[in-house]
Image 1 (tube, each protein chain N blue to C red):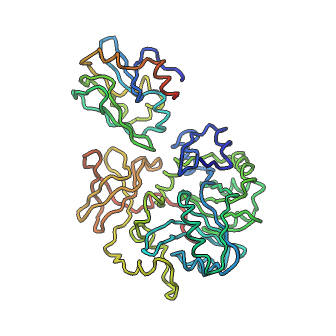
Image 2 (image 1 turned 180 degrees about the horizontal axis):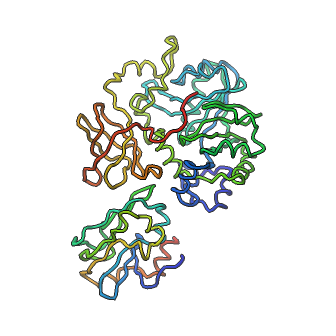
Image 3 (image 1 turned 90 degrees about the vertical axis):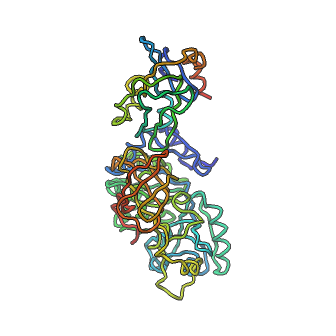
Length: 128
Length: 355
């Protein structure tokens, strides 16, 4: 597994979460996920202000081949979505951990971070 | 799982492999969209060796095909031509769609991969009364070279007989046991080359050498969808008849004395009430997928195949809908009603589907 940034935490369903310095959480999908999906052509993002529960549907990502659900790694309220993805969903393919982020939320329960996988453990999941 | 003779070549190119009807096939080599665009704008080569190939020996082969095939093989019995059509059961249900080739007094048939055993048994059962022997050619594979530059690239491949360049749409020729045919599944110019397994790696390498881009089954699907060509198992099954599957044009009843299997059932169908396969363009943001429900002023329907069209840069699909549709309708995606436009299923097709 190549280049997984060390400050990320993962769901085994390939979503990542990053704790930002202001305490918000940025969420996206992994490099492995974008590679499995292939060319991404459409993303449906949550609404700003929407409340999400951990490990439930938050977004939809569609490649040419198929549609996939994106689950929220943490519970919280959506503060911002990456509107760039509406016109350029292919950014997820080229920059899954940076420009291709999905949404930011204010977490309601930071202890949920303990349920997430470290980069090493996530790496093992991908190799299974 | 079955592998084509080109399996190692696909792995060497870094292809992503998938299980397709129990065959391990390349879905893409790099980017599906780039592969798609290579075929629309230049030329690509496909390994379609998973398709089923049958030859026939002895007996009255024309009479055999006249009985089992809903299109009329008399159209190609003078030779050097191919014909597309449907294999029907007695109820008029589609068992498969296929192409029959005839050249040098020989017939060859190519049908789908998932229907191989069904078709072999069906052919063998009906071949008996005509004294025809059915020979499955699992010793052969198929390359498709397709795109606006296909013919010029094919000419540059030395071992392909130069006469192949003179073939017209749905024309074909044998070169020894090899069959070269101007057919395809992309809507583009090009050939399908049916060659012995032993020779196919060499031909593949030469195709890559002259500049053909390797294309996986992923782009093959978006290309055929843009061309409005049905995929058996997806857009039509044994539970569909040809008139609700855009195959009415392949049903040939001009010879009234010809009794083909399924004919009586077709004659009892009221075509004015049959559903139709129509092209659909999504006018809102999203992607059409198989199974989504459709409504229009006078009826409803269902998306059969749906994807993103790299050429049109929007989502397109094939749908089976009730008659009476006008220009616009709705599709339901995750409980939201989105706007669609009904169009000809031939979104992009530059070549004819018959001689």
